[in-house]
Image 1: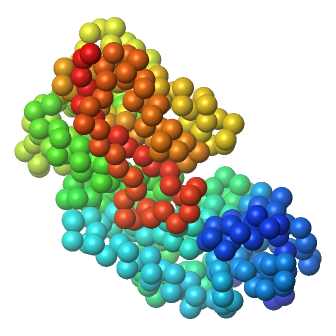
Image 2 (image 1 turned 135 degrees about the vertical axis):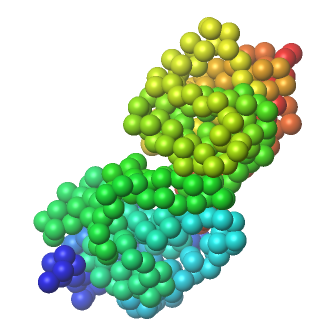
Length: 413
């Protein structure tokens, strides 16, 4: 008996739902979520993972998705417009379509990337990341538990791998525990007893796929890290919110004179130093002076400025500041403060790289906020260049567009 044998199965009888007119319009436009507040009629109560069929006001099929009674996102839509059997073959088709999008990465010296980006790849609430020969599956809703057998069978068909690690969000972990599932469990092979090594654009990194944040690494900034490598030659680089040193390693590989990695987490910066050491055979990495600073980012930026330090390239990649609409104003204030501090540390004609991963903050809000903050600081940004999502993080609906990044030269008024 395997751990999967204990999992529940979805009910044979589907749940019939009717939703409000606004939700009908959103579903027809391809939105992958149905909120509890949008449901106006429901045939029966359901368990996590039961299939819910949504009909319009004229009882015509709109969509089918995974029902989750514990979430305000009551249905995560799998199929829209035309009815389909949700089974192993259906999952295999979705996984194959996602794999086709990522094919160009194989030619870039990259063995670490996102294979499935949740809703944006048609598998809402499910993330699949590749770390060389290790796959990491993360679930953000317990609605996937009854379908895990079919998902794994489809995965073995499309992406066979000697090791598959299960990661669970906090709420899902509590619901999965009675079935013998836990965060970091090896579903295929054995759990690694050391960080997993993978390559990204020809550079090597290590990720703790069992205990690390998210699935162990942030793949979404890969293209921005590559751009930093192109900009770093001969520069003094400051990497704020450095985490495990992704931007720092790329800057060193680009020929940076020095790199200072700042993060409040000592273990994260230990990982950054280890990632730098993994690439020590690269002469540029070997020649770059690398220092780490364990300190709150805002405190560190204020102190470095008070000390009169300056950098030719300042990278600021903070965590999400707005997880709800109510937090947007506070998030924008934080971005403005970071922008003022960043331009204050930039040398004359230096550059700043400012990023946001807050989906609640729109690109226009972010870019306007940091640009205005730099103006207010008397150090306007010129020749700005904006980037968004990499190809393994496609955007399939408005809320799916979370990543924004601005590159600009800092001038004195």
